[in-house]
Amino acid sequence: MADFHRFESEPLCDVVREIVRGFGSDAREVDLVSENLVRANLYGHDSHGIGMLPRYVEAYLEGSLKPNAQPRIRIDQGPMLALDGQTGFGQSIGHAAMAMGIERAREHGTCIMALGNAHHLGRIGEWAEMAVAAGLVSVHFVNVISRPLVAAWGGRDARLGTNPFAIGIPIEGREPFILDLATSVIAQGKARVAYNKGVPLAPGQLLDHEGRSTTNPAHAVVGPLGALLPFGEHKGFGLSLACEILGGALAAGLAVHGPDEGKKRVLNGMLTILIDPARLGDAQGFAEQTLACLDWVTASPPQDGVEAVMLAGEPERRACTERRAHGIPVDGATWSAILAAADKLGVEVDRSTRHVGGLSAEA
Ligand SMILES: NC(=O)c1ccc[n+]([C@@H]2O[C@H](COP(=O)([O-])OP(=O)(O)OC[C@H]3O[C@@H](n4cnc5c(N)ncnc54)[C@H](O)[C@@H]3O)[C@@H](O)[C@H]2O)c1
Image (cartoon, rainbow, N blue to C red; front, top):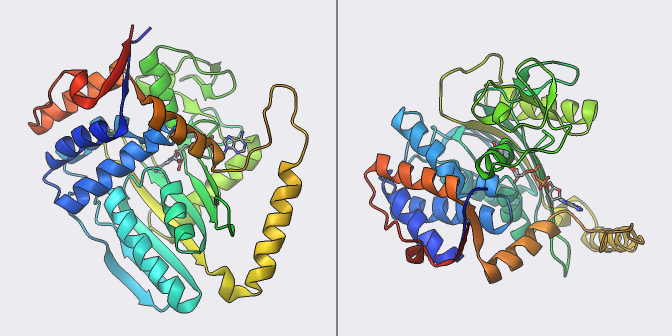
């Protein structure tokens, strides 16, 4: 069993800031990247948190992740906006792109924002949260240009990325609905987390290199490499392909069509649709109907072993409350990989876990 640390979020974020400074990022980018990564951990998505740093370092060292990039405007026609992310940090490019899209949606009532060529955009729910904080509904179709990881439904090998899809809906007087999912049964990073922890995956998530079902996460991480399965069988496969075509071919001008072998970069294309519900019709009716619907659905009597019916976004908020109180768990293998990545950037990090507010280290 791998060792475990629990870190308080603020000291952990300070260490991440030190590491991100090693890319040469300016102060704004350091904050955006570090806070975004630690927030993913706080929300329970370790797959998209600080454990991504070693991959970012490899992408940077191969020259395919460019610090301090800004989105370049390709098309600017009122509510239609197309941006090139110039392979910059997705956490910074995504933030700038969403800010532009939100401004357009405020002006026109809607915005269709196409973003291509951004390095890893992280947790896509972050962008939906930004939209709902501005009172907007948002829909995001995202493709991934990297080594394919996910099988086509009925196929034996990996042909697609984990192509995330997200929807954000502001709800008057309540927490927003944030649906944010990978179109694979599990996000690839979750296989990496399982591999680092030395635990098997649940059955029905992964194929091995010969297309047979396996629970060994090595087949998603170090090889011989197989393929994750799409969620929801043929339905998830259909949504994944829609993400590839809309987030990739339409928004980014680049859809997966080969192995992308040997490259460490992770590029995301994202088609974002923003809608101001107050400009599309009856804002009060929308709010009332939404609340009535959610009340009806959540009043369903829970099954045995289930506390209550939850809405999308709630598990992340619960994880955040728990992790703020008890710290963020980081397994020993992930922590070692982060420290090794810092070394590659020439950043000296104090090895003592106390330095990052280590609350406990379990053997
Ligand atoms: N940038 C990229 O290239 C990329 C690629 C893939 C995934 N991702 C990110 O990975 C993250 C993890 O994705 P995932 O598919 O593992 O998420 P997940 O399966 O943990 O959750 C998916 C959604 O279901 C909701 N949910 C979870 N349990 C629920 C329950 N019991 N009742 C009701 N709703 C529930 C969550 O709130 C969430 O909206 C996401 O943030 C995604 O954006 C990013």
